[in-house]
Image 1 (cartoon, rainbow, N blue to C red):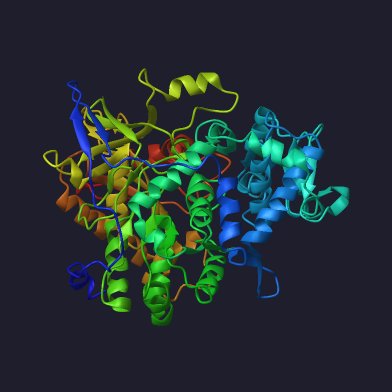
Image 2: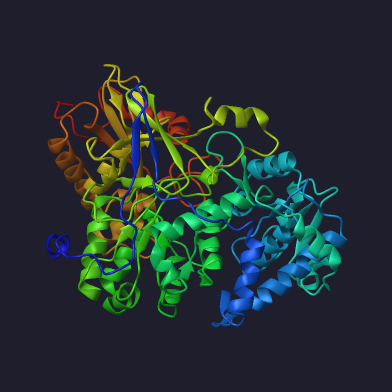
Length: 622
């Protein structure tokens, strides 16, 4: 876009955001301790107390809304949400469910999902959302079977048993209640549960719910081995929302309106987005679309009907959204014209996307919409830091939130981020050995991300993401390669060709790249591509290969060191496989799993002489 350079100079839109403040203390071993000088403040005991407050204060306000299948919306107000979830809690009591066994939810986001989740929280029954991909995209159901066997849920919920038939057949359901939305095929009916008259037993159970009560078991993506069940307590969930008030005081000015697809089985969608809506009495419009071919059109249709006050997504989602907004000025103006913030998390936002979002905001409203983020994980409920200010630094993840103690521990030539505080999980369900390994001797959770100061002389300028500690590797020369930062740099350099990439070169002389193409981006370069074009068709196009070669060549010209220079690259037509742990349900690439599964492609990248089908950037004769 011609106006990108001009947009970078435009001011931020007027939004109430916290400035960066931090206390930094050197530990003497090259590490640091960071704290937020602003205190955390009072934290509610549990989310059900929050729900009841919202039902009393705004009983008829829409809490949740989902598509009804006929082009309209099914809505649930706060008063009804409080009543029906309490009824579900009573039904759980009546059927003998308790705190020792969770209730597993296999289905995607829905009003019924939300009601069952809140019903469980009334009566101290942990809820365990499971990625639908384990049931609907998997071929062997290994992760699903492992999760169910280890966590031993007393009940399994699917909204409609039809699509889940194969997965349910693969499970051992002996001693487990099967629950569906309408009681199909003789199963327990959630709709009937939601009409159960509440008794004194419900209030007695709720009186026993406190900050240390297990609210959820959230599963890690399972990128290495079976997914781990992260214990999420009521204190974690409530404290994290109090923290966000400090970072985003605009939430107190108007109830948030969210139109969102992020899965509730993940901490970003299920804790950050869902709980933020509940905590501030907002409205959550469930987006059944996703940033994927054939599904993103549903997202766009929803955004043409719903006007959010803030928009949350992962970088992959913004990559697709930007192209739609560039092509539709009306949608651009509707979405960005009065938006409080654009929030991203889960992965760093490539600079090329940030610049395009700035330009689109300036075109829509004459100012840049603040683009904000944080660093966290499933084990931190999720946010541990906040970044809300105007920073030119790509990868800035900000400073700790109130109540968070952040240790920067030396790890090789990196500083590893570690967290301690009320939002940190006590550990993993039924896995004391994994719990012990996750914490250091001082009780700090090892998040696995490396960070560094943007300006060591001024910690308040924020911390910059410096890659995953476990992803980094050494070349044969002994030089470390920072995979996370390099991956993002090459994705930006090769825009719009790459959706994601894996970096190769462990114990080799040079760095290679396995590129996963972005179909929307490649279509922008080749508008004549057929609607049914496959990825194999895409990567065969000379325009795509040349753009990738030129982008990487420019990157190399600006990054001549052996730890940042790409020697060879290939585009793969085989998407990352969820069964092999190569990708999470939100689309994040797992570097180690990709390299392990695609060892033959790695060897091909580094073979001598080079394969002529590769993009060779070494300049050496072949």
